Length: 336
Ligand SMILES: [Zn+2]
Image 1 (cartoon, rainbow, N blue to C red):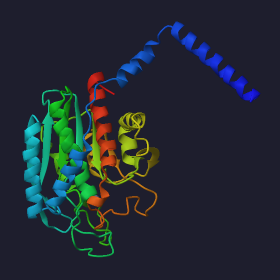
Image 2: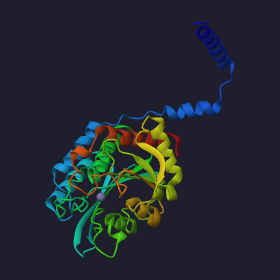
Image 3: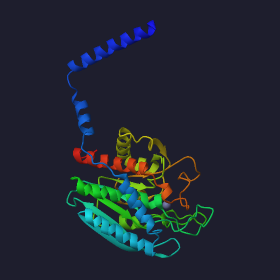
Image 4: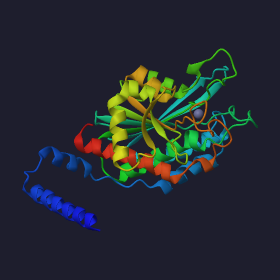
């Protein structure tokens, strides 16, 4: 008891001294600046809306190129974005798959503040894998692509709605990329890495605006799984390290560290690779990576398990809210 009492007294004294000295210390301008950054007004990301937009895409059916579901979903997204964006660009193209099949494709770009040269590019692919080649059953049938495809788009559609309602000066482009997931299955030889990301490769060579540039970009891919872990992916770390740290620090500061992990994992081929390498726009990839599977992707990846049960509102919230903090803080500070 006595010891306990002594500790309490000492603690009280030290607290008193600390508090007293605090009030007499001149204000630290650097600290004030940090506080100001934290207080940038940021709208709330509505995960219910993002979940609904994700489900809406899944309800069309698998968004496989040349299918009715693909056309219908594309039409719906264009009509949606036209309600909120300043300008919507529709890039129609015919792309050749690894097997020679012509894929009728559309890249859809929704732009805000088109005259501001300081821009952020936000991207996700909207097509879905035509086969469940990583599954053990019904391997030839298309997958729902609830997480791999629809989740990233769902988050970006909600961001579009919010940007229209909460003024921002920075130029923002929401880029929905097509024909990402028609890549050659692993059991076909020889490997053909560039058979993925066909819509992106086309867009990089034919941007919707001549000479298109953005200060940086963020790609979303598989951002909805329950308890997803987003690591610092290798291609992002190589080409866009300052922006990767910027976004990850914001996520951790806002309490989303459970999702945004600080470990660096191997680089992967995804849309951001081409955007970094062809257009020279530093772009990071927020993508679910795990050490639990040989592929490093979630066990649902390219299987029939990738359905709405693989979309959790809490994960959508962590990603969407982090994106909003990133956008509005960048906007307030005119840079990172
Ligand atoms: Zn995929």
